[in-house]
Image 1 (cartoon, one colour):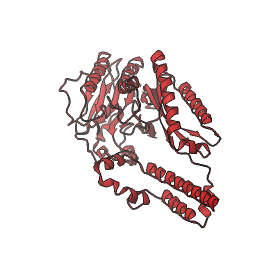
Image 2 (spheres, rainbow, N blue to C red; image 1 turned 180 degrees about the vertical axis):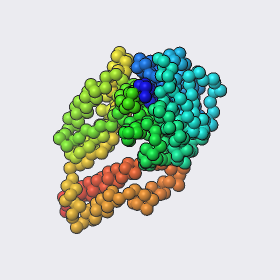
Image 3 (cartoon, rainbow, N blue to C red; image 1 turned 120 degrees about the vertical axis):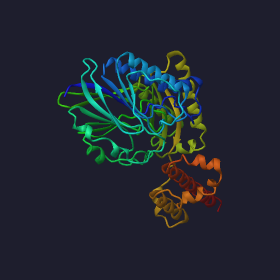
Image 4 (cartoon, helix red, strand yellow; image 1 turned 90 degrees about the vertical axis):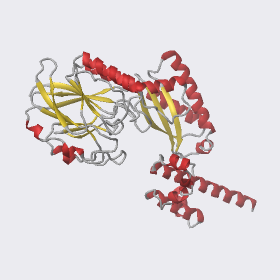
Length: 436
């Protein structure tokens, strides 16, 4: 087997709108909207500098089937650069950019191969001498809803070749519950195929599901919201004479998302909390110096400071001041090493003796035990949460809003309501006892 090198990327989601974010300045919003294109440019430059033999992209080049003209033109520009550098690109389309999406009728550069709606196999060559080094099998989604196990349709006869065999597949392997179940398959299905490397797309977190054969999700090249934390990029893959794979991850993102916690356990005044928050932000800025950090901060723990935070005014003031200072810094120094607070989430509580109250033979104790039983179960239609939300679900706008709320977020509502109710009842007991 001849040694060669290629790039595995997926889920570019070009021109993602970064919708639903509030409080952004025009500069921040513009930078976010450009970030997927910057990551694409970095991918192209990486392919050139690493002198790869080819690039594979495993679906979801675009963010929506209603593809923007800007995204198409920028992608074509990137493909033309790679073509001029004599770097072939092999592409499948996924659920966000299926083949039936309306797009420009353009002629692709000669070295670009887009797989059709049926599995097909092509041969890839080494750039320096044109010798065959790999066979690549892939299939694009004909429509956005591909619910069958298309991996079973991939040709196993191609593995009879002595060449390294790569499978391009946009799929949910082993039923990941956090993602839509498109082209569902199992690791067993992929292992039994005889392929050497499965270049997957669809899951946006970086994962190596299996080695020998390699079954790999590179993740997306640019995180787009708070649920896509951590570094984003692609893999450069080296295959040696023995067919051994060496993988190196390369960061491509220019905006990175962080979901962090700050505890109020040892805070006696909001000013102490503010200082802890600033210390956290400085640490994040030092850890990611090449781009913009977008940070959500969860306020955790229990203490007297929680009562000051409950109405939201103090956190709003801290947020406004942090954003003002950072925006001023951006104007002078650009976005590298910058930190923007996406928002706060108040998950803290007051210093109530919850364990003691749970054991009480009282109305408060009974209420808390019912709430705890609910929290330990699954949020569903017949749960307390489900029954409370049912009247609201009759209104279309509210139903649409609530459809994006996770079960964990619903349970957090219940936990907060449980604590607030206990506090109010305890306060009422104390005031009643004083008047008596």
